[in-house]
Image 1 (cartoon, one colour):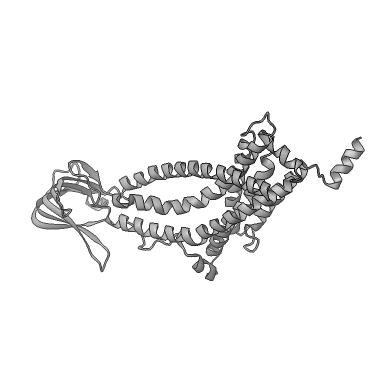
Image 2 (tube, one colour; image 1 turned 120 degrees about the horizontal axis):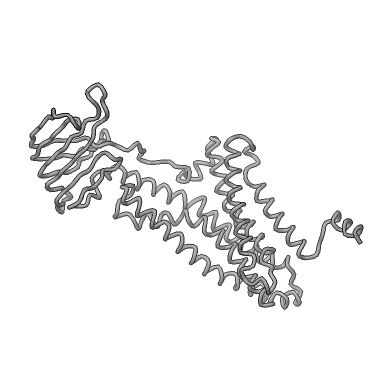
Length: 371
């Protein structure tokens, strides 16, 4: 039908612009956070772009439902403002026909959302976890900038290197670290090391890392105590503090959906239902956008945008509340999240019926009694 194609065209053209804006905002926020992680040693500088790309898979699951919701709202609001909806209604196309048209796009987006939440996002999250774990294991020495003082990750101490050669070895090093507090021996000891060369090695068997310093001296003692120990060495190894990380950090979002499906653990089943719920979100929001888009010419194109965003925030937060309720046992797992989406769909249909002049029987009886 010509009108159906026209409505889909208007929504899709608006959708491209909305997705572009939301993607730019998400990338900007993610870039700031990733740069902070680089400076903190959580990720390596060379993997910054890869990390941004992997995080986009997770961000897409948030962008898709919101972009569809806003694009339907803005596109249909423009048609109401320009009186095109009046002409469309004169052709015999009512609000429920528009709802069916919107559902075509909503189902397509729900399938795409399902592919992201069930397949692509867990893969990207797992790869991201391995990257961050690797960076945490190697961030004690990598990322050191020559000619300036650099803080070792975990606030272990500071290190200064005059230069770094092509092999990654440090030259003319100043290192200061603090040992664990020992009250029996006068408190926490600090030691300072000055060396000509330094490099890091990794023990594959134990997973421990050592900083190997060559041709230098070590000064050890308690601050304020004149009793210092001085050690001259040709080669000296310092064990670097390890982060309590697992090589494959199995965060919930990184767990493959097949593993969630085969598991009987409560938290795994909640995560599985959460991923399915994210796909259903596209349908509920798309239906809600249809009655919310109805505006008068005085209201303008963005007349109900604030109300629409408020409902989106409330609904999204309520889903998180329901997730906590299921985890705490206040709601049975079998009930899941589907009932929340049913409430959203019923709200959309109820608003559409009221706008169409259809009222429940008890409301009609009240009106008749009042007259």
